[in-house]
Image 1 (cartoon, rainbow, N blue to C red):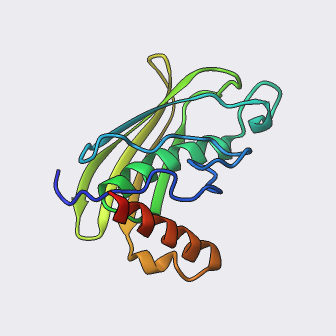
Image 2 (cartoon, rainbow, N blue to C red; image 1 turned 45 degrees about the horizontal axis):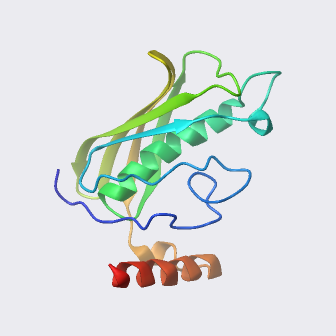
Length: 160
C-alpha cells in the first residue's frame, strides 16, 4: 500500500499502549515499514483485572485501539481514532498469552480503516473495526508533553 511514513518507535515513553508506562500494555511498534498488518503478543496481568481472573473490558478495548492505532500511524504518521466499534465475544482471562492482530482495510483521503482481533490460539475473544484520521503533527505539539515528544521524533528522524 502507498502513503507509508515512519512512526518513531517509542513515540512517547508515557504512552499507555506502547510506552514504558509501568501500568500500560507495553506493545511493540510495528516493524515492517509499508506493511498493512500488525501482530503482537500480549499478556494482561493482575493489575488489568476486573472481576476475579478476568481482564477489564475497557482495557481489552484499549488494546484493540492501540493495535489499530499503531498500524494506522505506521501507515500514515500521525493518526488518531475517529470511530471504533468493539465486539466482545468471550471473557479474557488474565495471565494468558494472547495474540493481538490488526490490518489496514482501506485508505481514502485522511481516513484509514483498520480491523483488529484479540485471539487466544484460534479463538477470537474480541474484535474491533475502527476509522483513524491522519492529523498534522501540530495536533500533538500544543501541549508541553507533545512538544517534548515532537523534539524527540525530530531528532530520531534526522538521525536516520
